[in-house]
Structures are given as structure tokens and as C-alpha cells.
Length: 128
Image (cartoon, rainbow, N blue to C red; front, side, top):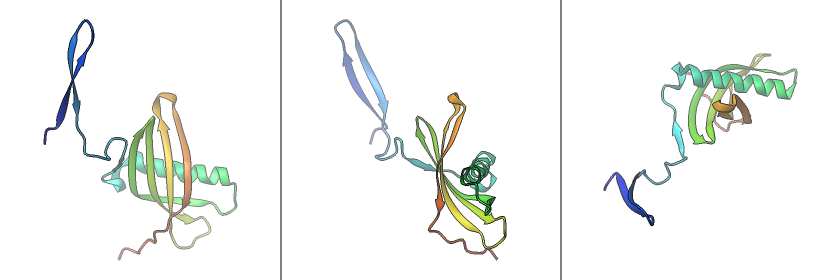
């Protein structure tokens, strides 16, 4: 299977060939898994921002403390959208909990916005 397709583009004055790369179905604009999440400083900072923003917006006595991002995906939109699974602990103590966050970043606007932050259905298993 070819990795590109050629379309003739004809106008009244000129003829051009337009070459477009082919991508597997579902890839354009699809989510991409982020590798090496544990060592990716940008992703870990995004997770910390998510927890801090959640605490700021919630204004509750029971704040969460960021532990680490355990899984991440990214999606090219008008900017970049990050889908994060974040391990947290309550500042009062207790077992770690996982939250899912969605953050949208538009660098040209210097904009970062927390779109979603909610408990995950996943349970963390202790690492021995």
C-alpha cells in the first residue's frame, strides 16, 4: 500500500500535482500515548498543575497532593490536549487515589486550561 496519494489540481492557468501523506484510519487528530511518562518533566508538570488548579477551583479543606502522572495521552487539536491519569493523596493522609484530568494547552496564546478533573474508575495496586 502506498504511503502517499497524488491528486491532480488543475486551474485555468496551471496544472499542479498535490501529494498528501496517507495515515492509518483514526490517526489524524487521534490520541497518542505518551512514552516514558514517569520521566517526562513536561507531563509531570502538567499533572501537578492539574491538581493545583483543581484545589484552587474547589476551595475545600480536603486538598489533594500531587504524587505522579501514571499514564498520559496527547491529541493535536487547536493546540494540544493532554489526557492524564494522576495519582494523588489527600493532604490529611489515606490511600492514594487516581484522577483523570484533561488539560488544553495553546502555547501561542500562553494558555493552559483544566477542562476535566474527576475520580478514575481505576484502582492503584501497590508495588512490592
